Image (cartoon, rainbow, N blue to C red; front, side, top):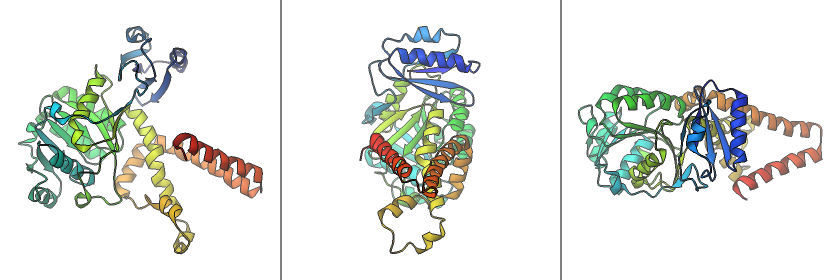
Length: 367
């Protein structure tokens, strides 16, 4: 269950509501955005009356996103059944690593007609020549698509959907692949509503070291996680989840996670963006130039994502700077602890903070 809080709600009012929810035996996941605050409830919400909560002055709307007795309130296994989706034609916009892999997955595991477009005519022509595409996606045939996947950079996603919205088929499902969700969803949800199609923010948690169509594969998404952000104004988010599961069944995702755009961006700052920044900074040490013969698995793990697409990641980092700065402040504070323990030759302190990190890893992910 999620409760969308009105913008004028005070901190004290929000605190009191979250404490009441906790008293009912459920966990509260608070997501704050520029325009709204969302409280996600995880646990057995069967004893909570949505109409009663929605009647509160500070609550704008309440929506169940899972069955009341489900502990996995925002995550579900994603086998799906493409035959139930009713999708006959799939359109892919952008045939890089992600878009190309989507196209190949649908080509390999479905009987749908595949239309595709890329800014490079040579890529589009090659994809058609090798049989991945049935035809090139154009303004004339985009209206045929029951499912449209827009695999571009963040701003380009917004621009494409906004420009082509009047041409998109009524009732079609449109999913993006952008690495951040707040701005994309804020711009695209109202456009979709106005033009009669369903937009769902999407972020497949899969990738490779190298980008481009030549590295794409129909198996890229197999057993990985797909994050989706439905429009919080949707009256039945659970049905949207099932619709996405069926539509993306050929991709063989291992699970689908539903969350708010705010929650997505705050989590991605930690799980993805910080890893890239730390790796990119770590490799700049002058000692790195002499690492040959002295490095093994630890060095490879730490530097794997230092080699990145600076254009794409600059756009992502700047757009999500509030969440990223929080994570940077956090890790810098912890690093200062290690540094001070070394400077003070404080063996007990160093041992303690090292043990704390080990136990945190064990508690979160196991050994």
